[in-house]
Amino acid sequence: MPSTSRAQHKYFEWIAHDPAAPAKTGVPQAVAREFVKADKGRSLSKLPQHKAEGGAVSSYPKKFRW
Image (cartoon, rainbow, N blue to C red; front, side, top):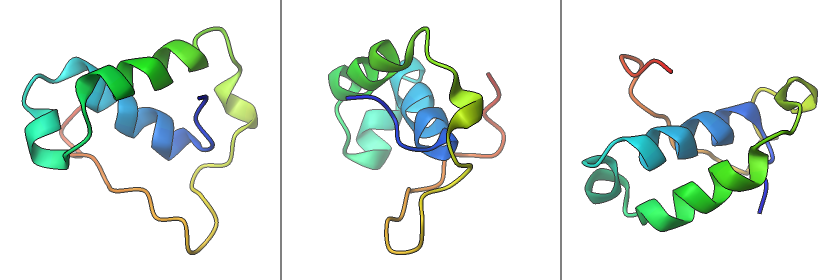
């Protein structure tokens, strides 16, 4: 399933690449890797920065950089 916003993409990238993230978020690393794989080759610049109100995306640590 591809990401619906850039924030969601960054969130799943964080979970996919940080071994401690699944314990903090409750999202399995396999699910995050599936999202990252679905986004590969896609233009993320066309996605909105954040989801519309009501569709919250948990924030990821600001110290985490790609």
